[in-house]
Length: 417
Image 1 (cartoon, rainbow, N blue to C red):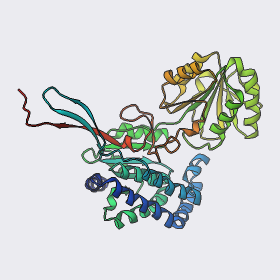
Image 2 (cartoon, helix red, strand yellow; image 1 turned 120 degrees about the horizontal axis):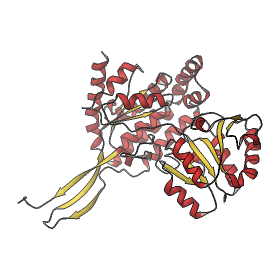
Image 3 (cartoon, rainbow, N blue to C red; image 1 turned 45 degrees about the vertical axis):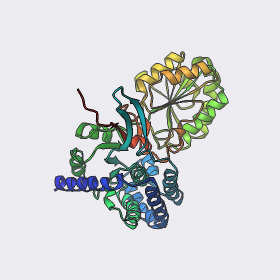
Protein backbone atom coordinates (compact mmCIF):
# COMPACT_ATOMS: atom_id res chain seq x y z
CA UNK A 1 0.00 0.00 0.00
CA UNK A 2 2.75 2.48 0.95
CA UNK A 3 4.74 1.56 -2.15
CA UNK A 4 1.80 2.27 -4.45
CA UNK A 5 0.92 5.54 -2.71
CA UNK A 6 4.53 6.73 -2.85
CA UNK A 7 4.68 5.97 -6.57
CA UNK A 8 1.38 7.76 -7.24
CA UNK A 9 2.46 10.86 -5.30
CA UNK A 10 5.78 10.95 -7.14
CA UNK A 11 4.24 10.43 -10.57
CA UNK A 12 1.73 13.23 -10.03
CA UNK A 13 4.50 15.54 -8.85
CA UNK A 14 6.62 14.75 -11.91
CA UNK A 15 3.69 15.58 -14.17
CA UNK A 16 3.04 18.82 -12.28
CA UNK A 17 6.72 19.76 -12.56
CA UNK A 18 6.35 19.91 -16.32
CA UNK A 19 3.50 22.40 -15.93
CA UNK A 20 5.45 24.82 -13.75
CA UNK A 21 8.79 24.48 -15.55
CA UNK A 22 7.57 26.46 -18.56
CA UNK A 23 5.87 29.34 -16.71
CA UNK A 24 7.27 32.82 -17.21
CA UNK A 25 8.69 34.76 -14.28
CA UNK A 26 5.75 37.17 -14.41
CA UNK A 27 3.23 34.33 -14.27
CA UNK A 28 5.05 32.67 -11.37
CA UNK A 29 5.13 35.94 -9.46
CA UNK A 30 1.37 36.39 -9.85
CA UNK A 31 0.79 32.95 -8.37
CA UNK A 32 3.22 33.63 -5.54
CA UNK A 33 1.33 36.80 -4.62
CA UNK A 34 -1.85 34.76 -4.48
CA UNK A 35 -0.06 32.32 -2.18
CA UNK A 36 0.99 35.12 0.17
CA UNK A 37 -2.55 36.53 0.16
CA UNK A 38 -4.01 33.09 0.85
CA UNK A 39 -1.64 32.52 3.79
CA UNK A 40 -2.88 35.78 5.32
CA UNK A 41 -6.52 34.94 4.60
CA UNK A 42 -6.12 31.52 6.26
CA UNK A 43 -4.20 32.88 9.27
CA UNK A 44 -6.88 32.16 11.88
CA UNK A 45 -7.39 28.61 10.66
CA UNK A 46 -3.65 27.92 10.47
CA UNK A 47 -3.10 29.13 14.04
CA UNK A 48 -6.11 27.20 15.34
CA UNK A 49 -4.83 23.97 13.79
CA UNK A 50 -1.33 24.72 15.05
CA UNK A 51 -2.65 24.94 18.62
CA UNK A 52 -3.71 21.31 18.33
CA UNK A 53 -0.22 20.35 17.18
CA UNK A 54 1.23 22.27 20.13
CA UNK A 55 -1.02 20.44 22.61
CA UNK A 56 -0.06 17.10 21.11
CA UNK A 57 3.60 18.09 21.13
CA UNK A 58 3.49 19.03 24.78
CA UNK A 59 1.81 15.74 25.64
CA UNK A 60 4.58 13.89 23.78
CA UNK A 61 7.22 15.78 25.76
CA UNK A 62 8.81 17.68 22.89
CA UNK A 63 11.83 19.76 23.89
CA UNK A 64 11.57 23.53 24.27
CA UNK A 65 13.56 23.92 21.04
CA UNK A 66 11.14 21.69 19.12
CA UNK A 67 8.12 23.46 20.60
CA UNK A 68 9.58 26.82 19.59
CA UNK A 69 10.04 25.64 16.01
CA UNK A 70 6.53 24.19 15.98
CA UNK A 71 4.67 27.23 17.27
CA UNK A 72 2.94 29.58 14.82
CA UNK A 73 1.91 33.05 15.98
CA UNK A 74 0.25 35.83 13.96
CA UNK A 75 3.71 37.34 13.54
CA UNK A 76 5.17 34.07 12.25
CA UNK A 77 2.28 33.50 9.84
CA UNK A 78 2.77 37.03 8.54
CA UNK A 79 6.47 36.20 8.29
CA UNK A 80 5.64 33.28 5.99
CA UNK A 81 3.54 35.53 3.75
CA UNK A 82 6.21 38.24 3.73
CA UNK A 83 8.90 35.69 2.87
CA UNK A 84 6.89 34.65 -0.18
CA UNK A 85 6.68 38.29 -1.23
CA UNK A 86 10.45 38.59 -0.84
CA UNK A 87 10.80 35.65 -3.22
CA UNK A 88 8.64 37.53 -5.72
CA UNK A 89 11.22 40.32 -5.72
CA UNK A 90 14.11 37.95 -6.39
CA UNK A 91 15.28 37.33 -9.93
CA UNK A 92 14.15 34.04 -11.42
CA UNK A 93 17.30 32.08 -12.34
CA UNK A 94 15.50 29.76 -14.78
CA UNK A 95 16.53 30.48 -18.36
CA UNK A 96 19.63 32.47 -17.46
CA UNK A 97 22.43 31.60 -19.85
CA UNK A 98 26.01 32.56 -20.56
CA UNK A 99 28.40 31.83 -23.40
CA UNK A 100 31.30 29.54 -22.61
CA UNK A 101 33.01 30.00 -25.94
CA UNK A 102 32.63 29.88 -29.69
CA UNK A 103 34.52 26.95 -31.16
CA UNK A 104 36.81 27.25 -34.20
CA UNK A 105 34.20 25.35 -36.23
CA UNK A 106 31.58 28.02 -35.45
CA UNK A 107 29.66 26.13 -32.77
CA UNK A 108 28.44 28.45 -29.99
CA UNK A 109 28.56 26.78 -26.57
CA UNK A 110 26.31 28.14 -23.79
CA UNK A 111 25.08 26.99 -20.42
CA UNK A 112 21.49 27.59 -19.33
CA UNK A 113 19.85 27.29 -15.90
CA UNK A 114 16.93 24.87 -15.71
CA UNK A 115 14.77 23.49 -12.85
CA UNK A 116 15.86 20.32 -11.09
CA UNK A 117 12.39 18.77 -11.52
CA UNK A 118 10.88 17.21 -8.39
CA UNK A 119 12.33 17.91 -4.94
CA UNK A 120 11.37 15.96 -1.84
CA UNK A 121 11.67 17.81 1.48
CA UNK A 122 11.64 15.76 4.68
CA UNK A 123 11.42 17.80 7.86
CA UNK A 124 10.28 17.65 11.46
CA UNK A 125 8.56 20.27 13.65
CA UNK A 126 8.93 23.17 11.24
CA UNK A 127 5.54 24.02 9.68
CA UNK A 128 6.91 27.24 8.14
CA UNK A 129 9.07 25.06 5.87
CA UNK A 130 5.86 24.12 4.06
CA UNK A 131 5.40 27.69 2.82
CA UNK A 132 9.09 28.48 2.37
CA UNK A 133 9.92 25.34 0.43
CA UNK A 134 6.70 25.46 -1.59
CA UNK A 135 7.33 29.04 -2.73
CA UNK A 136 11.04 28.59 -3.43
CA UNK A 137 10.53 25.41 -5.43
CA UNK A 138 7.68 26.99 -7.37
CA UNK A 139 9.66 30.13 -8.28
CA UNK A 140 12.58 27.99 -9.44
CA UNK A 141 10.27 25.93 -11.67
CA UNK A 142 10.16 22.75 -9.57
CA UNK A 143 7.46 20.63 -8.02
CA UNK A 144 7.96 19.72 -4.37
CA UNK A 145 6.86 16.81 -2.19
CA UNK A 146 6.77 17.82 1.48
CA UNK A 147 6.94 15.08 4.08
CA UNK A 148 6.43 16.71 7.47
CA UNK A 149 6.96 14.99 10.81
CA UNK A 150 3.94 13.98 12.84
CA UNK A 151 4.56 16.89 15.25
CA UNK A 152 3.57 19.46 12.63
CA UNK A 153 1.56 17.47 10.12
CA UNK A 154 -1.79 19.18 10.72
CA UNK A 155 -0.27 22.67 10.64
CA UNK A 156 1.50 21.83 7.39
CA UNK A 157 -1.71 20.56 5.83
CA UNK A 158 -3.47 23.81 6.77
CA UNK A 159 -0.69 25.87 5.18
CA UNK A 160 -0.78 23.65 2.09
CA UNK A 161 -4.53 24.26 1.73
CA UNK A 162 -3.81 27.97 1.36
CA UNK A 163 -1.09 27.32 -1.23
CA UNK A 164 -3.35 24.92 -3.14
CA UNK A 165 -6.08 27.53 -3.23
CA UNK A 166 -3.70 29.90 -5.00
CA UNK A 167 -2.57 27.21 -7.44
CA UNK A 168 -6.12 26.22 -8.36
CA UNK A 169 -7.16 29.85 -8.82
CA UNK A 170 -4.29 30.08 -11.31
CA UNK A 171 -5.26 26.95 -13.22
CA UNK A 172 -2.31 24.92 -11.96
CA UNK A 173 -2.35 21.41 -10.48
CA UNK A 174 -2.23 21.08 -6.69
CA UNK A 175 0.49 18.47 -7.14
CA UNK A 176 2.98 21.27 -7.76
CA UNK A 177 3.11 21.39 -3.94
CA UNK A 178 2.28 18.08 -2.26
CA UNK A 179 2.11 17.50 1.48
CA UNK A 180 2.39 13.79 2.16
CA UNK A 181 -0.86 12.99 4.02
CA UNK A 182 0.70 10.80 6.69
CA UNK A 183 4.03 10.86 8.56
CA UNK A 184 4.22 7.08 8.32
CA UNK A 185 7.87 5.97 8.23
CA UNK A 186 7.16 3.21 5.71
CA UNK A 187 5.70 5.72 3.25
CA UNK A 188 8.75 7.96 3.63
CA UNK A 189 11.01 4.99 2.97
CA UNK A 190 9.11 4.20 -0.22
CA UNK A 191 9.33 7.83 -1.36
CA UNK A 192 13.11 7.61 -1.03
CA UNK A 193 13.08 4.80 -3.60
CA UNK A 194 11.28 6.82 -6.32
CA UNK A 195 14.40 7.69 -8.31
CA UNK A 196 12.48 7.64 -11.60
CA UNK A 197 10.35 10.60 -10.53
CA UNK A 198 12.13 12.49 -7.73
CA UNK A 199 15.36 14.30 -8.56
CA UNK A 200 16.64 15.48 -5.16
CA UNK A 201 15.94 14.86 -1.47
CA UNK A 202 16.58 17.51 1.20
CA UNK A 203 16.15 16.37 4.83
CA UNK A 204 15.92 18.95 7.62
CA UNK A 205 15.83 17.77 11.19
CA UNK A 206 17.74 15.86 13.81
CA UNK A 207 20.85 13.81 13.33
CA UNK A 208 18.91 10.56 13.28
CA UNK A 209 16.66 11.74 10.44
CA UNK A 210 19.60 12.96 8.35
CA UNK A 211 21.46 9.67 8.73
CA UNK A 212 18.37 7.59 8.01
CA UNK A 213 17.54 9.50 4.81
CA UNK A 214 21.16 9.45 3.61
CA UNK A 215 21.48 5.72 4.23
CA UNK A 216 18.10 4.78 2.75
CA UNK A 217 17.63 7.00 -0.27
CA UNK A 218 18.24 5.90 -3.84
CA UNK A 219 17.94 9.58 -4.79
CA UNK A 220 20.74 12.16 -4.37
CA UNK A 221 20.56 13.78 -0.90
CA UNK A 222 21.66 17.24 0.17
CA UNK A 223 22.26 17.10 3.90
CA UNK A 224 21.10 19.83 6.26
CA UNK A 225 23.25 18.57 9.13
CA UNK A 226 23.29 19.81 12.71
CA UNK A 227 24.45 23.33 13.52
CA UNK A 228 27.39 23.21 15.92
CA UNK A 229 28.41 26.84 15.42
CA UNK A 230 31.38 28.44 17.17
CA UNK A 231 32.45 31.95 18.08
CA UNK A 232 36.21 32.45 18.30
CA UNK A 233 37.32 35.52 20.25
CA UNK A 234 40.76 36.36 18.93
CA UNK A 235 43.55 38.05 20.88
CA UNK A 236 42.95 41.18 18.77
CA UNK A 237 39.18 41.22 19.33
CA UNK A 238 37.11 44.19 20.41
CA UNK A 239 35.76 42.53 23.55
CA UNK A 240 32.58 44.60 23.77
CA UNK A 241 31.82 43.66 20.19
CA UNK A 242 32.58 40.03 20.97
CA UNK A 243 30.24 40.04 23.96
CA UNK A 244 27.34 41.46 21.94
CA UNK A 245 27.88 38.86 19.21
CA UNK A 246 28.07 36.08 21.81
CA UNK A 247 24.81 37.09 23.49
CA UNK A 248 22.97 37.51 20.22
CA UNK A 249 24.24 34.23 18.82
CA UNK A 250 23.43 32.23 21.96
CA UNK A 251 20.34 33.84 23.49
CA UNK A 252 18.37 35.67 20.78
CA UNK A 253 16.77 32.38 19.71
CA UNK A 254 18.16 29.12 20.99
CA UNK A 255 16.31 26.39 19.11
CA UNK A 256 17.69 27.16 15.65
CA UNK A 257 20.62 25.73 13.73
CA UNK A 258 22.52 29.04 13.50
CA UNK A 259 22.60 29.60 17.26
CA UNK A 260 26.03 29.43 18.90
CA UNK A 261 26.92 26.18 20.63
CA UNK A 262 30.62 26.79 21.29
CA UNK A 263 32.77 29.68 22.52
CA UNK A 264 36.53 29.66 21.94
CA UNK A 265 38.68 32.32 23.60
CA UNK A 266 42.35 33.11 22.94
CA UNK A 267 44.36 32.68 26.13
CA UNK A 268 45.74 36.23 25.86
CA UNK A 269 42.26 37.74 26.41
CA UNK A 270 40.70 35.02 28.54
CA UNK A 271 41.31 36.88 31.84
CA UNK A 272 39.41 39.89 30.49
CA UNK A 273 36.73 38.33 28.32
CA UNK A 274 35.61 35.27 30.27
CA UNK A 275 34.51 37.29 33.36
CA UNK A 276 32.52 39.53 31.01
CA UNK A 277 30.97 36.47 29.37
CA UNK A 278 30.26 34.83 32.74
CA UNK A 279 28.34 37.86 34.00
CA UNK A 280 26.34 38.37 30.81
CA UNK A 281 25.52 34.70 30.25
CA UNK A 282 24.67 34.29 33.92
CA UNK A 283 22.10 37.05 33.63
CA UNK A 284 20.51 35.06 30.80
CA UNK A 285 20.57 31.80 32.81
CA UNK A 286 22.83 30.09 30.30
CA UNK A 287 24.26 26.75 31.44
CA UNK A 288 28.01 26.56 30.92
CA UNK A 289 30.06 23.49 29.98
CA UNK A 290 33.74 24.44 30.11
CA UNK A 291 37.20 22.99 29.84
CA UNK A 292 39.60 22.96 32.78
CA UNK A 293 41.16 26.31 31.83
CA UNK A 294 37.81 28.11 31.55
CA UNK A 295 35.56 26.54 34.17
CA UNK A 296 36.80 28.65 37.08
CA UNK A 297 35.47 31.86 35.54
CA UNK A 298 31.86 30.66 35.75
CA UNK A 299 29.71 29.97 38.82
CA UNK A 300 28.25 26.48 38.71
CA UNK A 301 29.84 25.55 35.39
CA UNK A 302 30.13 21.91 34.37
CA UNK A 303 33.72 20.89 33.62
CA UNK A 304 33.97 18.73 30.51
CA UNK A 305 36.79 16.75 28.95
CA UNK A 306 38.37 17.59 25.64
CA UNK A 307 36.38 14.89 23.85
CA UNK A 308 33.00 16.12 25.12
CA UNK A 309 32.69 19.15 22.89
CA UNK A 310 30.63 19.25 19.70
CA UNK A 311 27.13 19.04 21.19
CA UNK A 312 24.19 20.81 19.55
CA UNK A 313 22.31 21.97 22.66
CA UNK A 314 19.51 24.00 21.02
CA UNK A 315 18.94 25.49 24.46
CA UNK A 316 20.40 28.04 26.86
CA UNK A 317 23.63 26.05 27.06
CA UNK A 318 27.07 26.60 25.58
CA UNK A 319 30.48 24.92 25.63
CA UNK A 320 33.48 27.13 26.43
CA UNK A 321 37.14 26.48 25.77
CA UNK A 322 40.32 28.54 26.17
CA UNK A 323 42.73 27.95 23.27
CA UNK A 324 46.44 28.67 23.05
CA UNK A 325 46.27 30.53 19.76
CA UNK A 326 44.57 30.88 16.38
CA UNK A 327 45.73 27.43 15.26
CA UNK A 328 44.22 25.92 18.40
CA UNK A 329 40.87 27.47 17.52
CA UNK A 330 41.06 26.09 13.98
CA UNK A 331 41.92 22.62 15.24
CA UNK A 332 38.94 22.68 17.60
CA UNK A 333 36.56 23.81 14.84
CA UNK A 334 37.90 21.16 12.48
CA UNK A 335 37.32 18.46 15.08
CA UNK A 336 33.98 19.55 16.54
CA UNK A 337 32.32 21.84 14.00
CA UNK A 338 29.52 20.56 11.78
CA UNK A 339 30.34 22.61 8.68
CA UNK A 340 27.45 25.01 9.28
CA UNK A 341 28.64 28.45 10.50
CA UNK A 342 31.80 29.67 12.21
CA UNK A 343 32.51 33.20 13.48
CA UNK A 344 35.65 35.12 14.42
CA UNK A 345 35.78 38.42 16.26
CA UNK A 346 39.03 40.27 15.59
CA UNK A 347 40.27 43.70 14.61
CA UNK A 348 43.18 42.15 12.72
CA UNK A 349 42.26 42.01 9.02
CA UNK A 350 44.93 39.45 8.21
CA UNK A 351 43.67 37.13 10.94
CA UNK A 352 40.09 37.55 9.75
CA UNK A 353 41.09 36.75 6.17
CA UNK A 354 43.00 33.69 7.29
CA UNK A 355 40.00 32.46 9.30
CA UNK A 356 37.68 32.91 6.32
CA UNK A 357 40.14 31.18 4.01
CA UNK A 358 41.06 28.23 6.22
CA UNK A 359 37.87 27.36 8.12
CA UNK A 360 35.98 24.59 6.32
CA UNK A 361 32.38 25.67 6.84
CA UNK A 362 29.42 26.55 4.65
CA UNK A 363 29.33 30.05 6.16
CA UNK A 364 32.28 31.86 7.73
CA UNK A 365 31.84 35.25 9.38
CA UNK A 366 34.04 37.99 10.75
CA UNK A 367 32.65 40.35 13.39
CA UNK A 368 28.99 39.44 12.84
CA UNK A 369 26.45 37.26 14.64
CA UNK A 370 25.95 33.65 13.57
CA UNK A 371 22.23 34.43 13.53
CA UNK A 372 22.74 36.07 10.13
CA UNK A 373 23.51 32.63 8.66
CA UNK A 374 20.07 32.46 7.11
CA UNK A 375 18.84 32.69 3.54
CA UNK A 376 16.57 35.64 4.24
CA UNK A 377 19.27 37.57 6.10
CA UNK A 378 21.78 36.90 3.33
CA UNK A 379 19.50 38.20 0.59
CA UNK A 380 18.26 34.87 -0.80
CA UNK A 381 14.67 35.24 0.35
CA UNK A 382 13.33 32.28 2.32
CA UNK A 383 15.77 29.38 2.27
CA UNK A 384 14.95 25.76 1.65
CA UNK A 385 17.76 24.70 3.97
CA UNK A 386 21.41 25.17 4.79
CA UNK A 387 23.46 22.56 3.00
CA UNK A 388 26.43 21.16 4.87
CA UNK A 389 27.19 18.92 1.88
CA UNK A 390 29.57 20.28 -0.74
CA UNK A 391 28.07 18.77 -3.87
CA UNK A 392 25.82 21.09 -5.88
CA UNK A 393 25.10 23.52 -3.03
CA UNK A 394 26.90 24.61 0.15
CA UNK A 395 25.35 26.92 2.73
CA UNK A 396 21.90 28.55 2.63
CA UNK A 397 19.99 27.30 -0.41
CA UNK A 398 17.95 29.87 -2.31
CA UNK A 399 16.53 29.91 -5.81
CA UNK A 400 19.72 29.32 -7.75
CA UNK A 401 20.57 26.26 -5.65
CA UNK A 402 17.27 24.72 -6.78
CA UNK A 403 18.33 24.79 -10.41
CA UNK A 404 21.05 23.13 -12.45
CA UNK A 405 22.75 23.94 -15.75
CA UNK A 406 22.51 22.31 -19.14
CA UNK A 407 24.68 22.81 -22.21
CA UNK A 408 23.15 24.58 -25.19
CA UNK A 409 24.98 24.13 -28.48
CA UNK A 410 24.04 26.26 -31.51
CA UNK A 411 25.41 25.50 -34.93
CA UNK A 412 24.81 26.12 -38.62
CA UNK A 413 24.89 22.63 -40.07
CA UNK A 414 28.28 21.54 -38.70
CA UNK A 415 29.06 17.84 -38.73
CA UNK A 416 31.89 16.02 -37.00
CA UNK A 417 34.62 14.69 -39.25
